[in-house]
Amino acid sequence: MNKVFKALSDPSRRKVLELLRKGPKTAGELSDHFDFAKPTMSAHFAVLKEAGLVEAEKDGKQVIYRLKLSVLEDALLGFAKVFGVGAGATAPAPIVKRETKS
Image 1 (cartoon, rainbow, N blue to C red):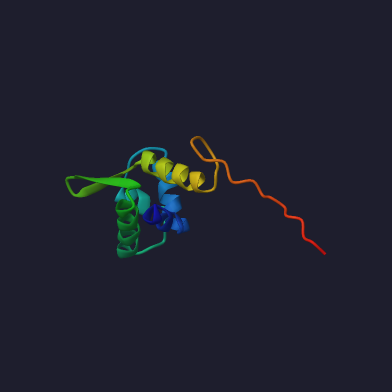
Image 2 (cartoon, helix red, strand yellow):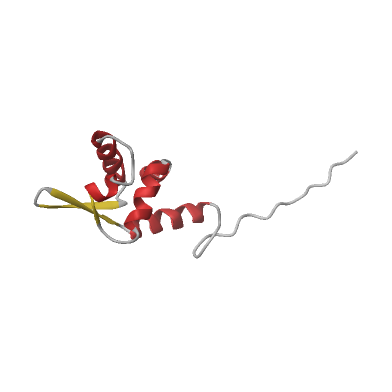
């Protein structure tokens, strides 16, 4: 889960994921939306792949990226459960006020 949140911490990587929500795109198509050098984009793609948020497929000289939404959903559900939110979460312990003696 830490790798997923590290990947999501960068606004540029979130933008890549947003673009991939509309369907698979080549590295070049994604890069057209940014003013980064190719090595910088490659580093962003590597972080997203390491987190399991995208998968890459070579097609000749092109690399096609696809969003792996299930990984993102699993991470967000796991995070929500930690805070007692969502299905399967355990209810937080009630706060008990104790009377103090004067």
